[in-house]
Amino acid sequence: MRGAAADPSPRPRRWAPLVAIVLLALTAQTSSGQSPSAGRPWIAPTDRRFQERFQQLLLDEPSRDLAVGWTYAEEIGRPVAPLLWGMLDAEQSNVERRLALLVAALVAGGPTSEERLFALLDLPKPLLAERAMASLWIALGPARARPMPRVLQRLIGPNKEPEDLLAVAARLAAGRYRVDAQATPVLHSKDPGLLAAAAFARLPVGKTVTQRLWRGEVRHGGLFRRAAMLGAARSEGSAPLQKALSEHAAAALSRTDTRDRGERAAAVLLLARHDALGAAATTLDWELLRVAVSQPQSAASLRKRLRPTPFARDPMPGLLAAAYAWNAPVSEVLGRAAEWGSEPQVRGALAVALAARLCFLPAAPEVEQQLDFPEWSFVTWASTGAFARPARFEDARLEAFAAVLAAGRATKASARAELELALWRWGSHPGLGPWELERQLIRDLLLVGSRAGGKYRAEVPTHLRYFPTGLDRDDPFFDIAVALYEFTGRRTRAVPYEYRLR
Image (cartoon, rainbow, N blue to C red; front, side):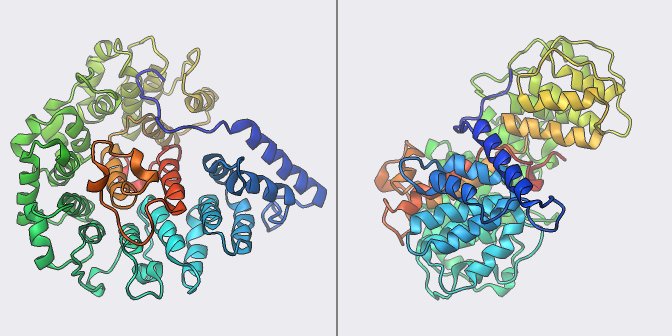
């Protein structure tokens, strides 16, 4: 896709094997005489062929490929979840194998997995690694609409004094639920990572132990400050920005030390959430501007900074171009179409964002221009309802969706969702800023201090990385955890609700 940066995460070559798996499933269905509507999964959970395939991909060396195995589980979905939970139950002692199966079962079941997961966690059996992996999976996922009773206690389990690794992971996971902070004891730990996880989840922390962290005098204090501001930026409702937080964010934004880049980005996010950037809105560089444009509250303040042409040195200019298409007056975006339509780096993302925006409008303006690049056809369709099928899209999913549009089988609501997902997939979605910042915080708290996580944040020496105690740095847990972090960063599924275009 021209104008959209390629997803940097490795993509498994999965389609041929996946077709084989589906054919196996259909064979199993036909041989048993059972139809998909017979009231049970159409994939037999005891089918040895599926079990052998997952055994090869998730458990056996040297054929193990976690990304491919988890992708199979994700693509087949809920019908194969019982098989994977059964394989997990049968795997008694090898923790590394259990972790790989646990992730596969969660991925296959999707949102329905959590009831089964918490039934497992309510037992005394799951120990540190499994509870920490379950917490990491939740933390890397979207916000949960339904509350989970006693979520923090259930993630931690019967241990009254859990290892720091589990304590940090469980609190990060709790941040994805609506937790009753008043019913949670105030945390008085001196560990900055544990305090950071609690602040991110908006759980109460003792003021006396955080004062030095705010002043920047304690090692890893930046983790706490990042987490506190990210947690405050995720707060629901329209509560006013607290004066102390505003002052802390302004102080972080004034720092220029490159080591504080994540902290400065969190400060921008918090201030943009409350339209409190002030004069800083006119001086943000392209990296921080990418974060600020995720907040519609600051759209008016940032409008003059946005433009339909690429910013200098921006390796993924599609995001700011899409933000321009989403925030500038529609008449202006259309009036400058010939200008940005000649910019291959941004025109695809800008046209898709504009088309998605037109789908939101009750009465879209009529577009008469005819520009010579494929994505422009979405703009004309959103405006007039007529779809002129271009020769070909470089994005395979958009190519398939174009056939649906050409056949007249798409509504504006479905087109809006598909176009927004395309921006997300390309790394051009304005909501990516907070999503990336939250993932980076989770990574820095749980993974970068391990051997497997050493590939992240290369600018930080090993002895300066935060490492929660509980497991050795080279424990196999971290190999699985790093694989899960990269697997959940592919952006191939639906845009999480909290980051969608508003």
